[in-house]
Length: 344
Image (cartoon, rainbow, N blue to C red):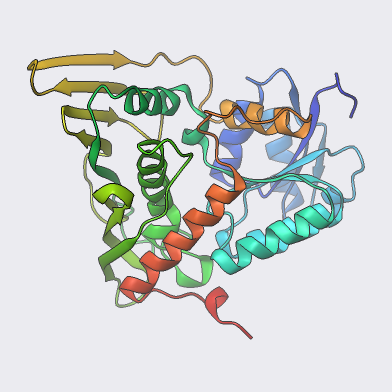
């Protein structure tokens, strides 16, 4: 790869989110889908044909041996993220890995150590954190339009039905609400609590949580965490896999509130309500590019040595570590553990 040539991507695993990523690459002039890989070569070839990839591989190892792959997007199940991060960077590839980066904080630190040893860029793929809508929300908070932040509420819920053997619910596959979607709500709370104090993000001082563990899968189907941040900013993060709820994020301040509709699958509408003026302003964010395109562009810019802007909302690695630590805390509060948590 030269400084002017497009980044040649390899996609590791061909599930539904990988299709979204491949679609978004078409919105990125500085990137190209070079290769895809699956344990099933027919599946890889069908994926490559659909999205215009030059090569299809019937194993992850074969794709990583391709010297023309510059960067890898890892879309495997959660428990396999660390393993394939390690293999990818050992092969000299930069890595953008789907959220959650790993199963816990210990693994995330291990992944970073391995990537650093090979001088490879490693980032967690939180698509909403790169979108202009999230940047706009942060700008509104830091402008002081609603005064000092008092409370933050973030919800991500949907009804996945009875899928006990699926990656969404099965424990062995890393299932459960916190790792699947609670990571979004936690990252939002930490982002806003930090920006309220002029920092990139903040860590909870206190955290209490309750949740329902399915008696058969032993994974969390619905759960809520409440937190206290510096300055007595309180936050409530709710996620569920067997419950429908309006998925919004709300920031309440001393002068009013900011409501973000569709905070995760941007773009949506940002509504500003000011108490004293009894006014409501709505900002409809236009759809300009595929949602995933923004994180891809951010990643490729970093690959080329362009630092993330000081005020950008992109997920930095220290932010990833803080989020993993908070998710570990949340899981511990409701008694949710995985095989990866056992230290041998």
